[in-house]
Length: 334
Ligand SMILES: [Fe+2]
Ligand SMILES: [Fe+2]
Image 1 (cartoon, protein in one colour):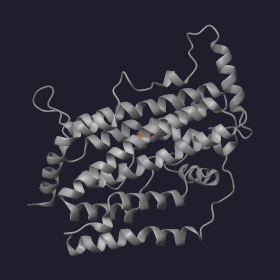
Image 2 (tube, rainbow, N blue to C red):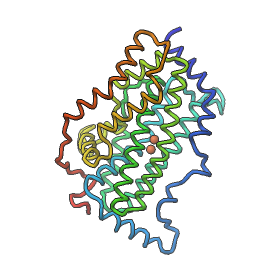
Image 3 (cartoon, rainbow, N blue to C red):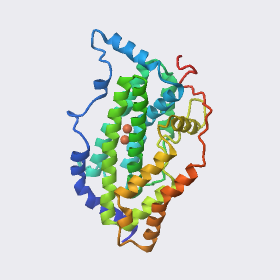
Image 4 (cartoon, rainbow, N blue to C red):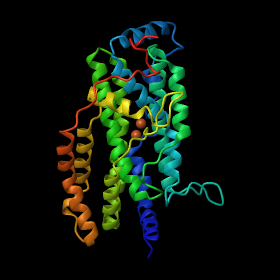
């Protein structure tokens, strides 16, 4: 059978477990938190006191912090790109001849999107109320990023896509958690809580996607291993790889954002390496048997990769010069 057909068969087989994964890893609408649970209730008489508190607490946070929070929010707001990308994967069927013919994979993507959509909403409203950033510039960046899309090197292959999403959900868990810790250190409890609760969602998503991959490993170990190796060889790019400021070229803001995140210790090369170690260990690739010769080699490559990357990372210094973004004024106030 051609490789693509085997993949489709595997996707059909795993699909039978997807409704169970939705129940296990996602939370029904009536039980899950909503952005307004974490933000001032503007229907309250004394709503202005809460807004004043947000603005006061926001004064303690530094330049790199705002840049990272803005770019994290914009990354979340580009969700239409991610949903349409995942809907296009081989094996996902979002419609049929009649209504209700979506398969369970399409249902997963929709429900996952529904949860993710709350992240950008929450951070967007917080940033708007904080009074520390130029919302119009940020909104232009978001619109640009959606216009520019992304290319994460997976094609329509579900194996590669699930490696990507496993990796990326853990990366966002780490970065939201760290931003929350920094906010807490500066006494900003409201923001700390938002970031923590978002990080909790990302953790559940990570656990789901890594389970998809683990299940695929059981059915098609060699091809899953080769897909994993291919993604790591290409490097996992960030979903906001093409981020730009207004008037600038595509992708021109990414490096400066990434440097700010590294300076703050919110997301570093060492985190990237740690994620790879975690995936190697959760998928137990060292114990995997019945691999083809090529997949054996891919496994060895993946096992050695974290140490090799760590040696290189030790030699690279993070640039210390702060780029001046249009999103945040120099002293943080506009
Ligand atoms: Fe998210
Ligand atoms: Fe996520």
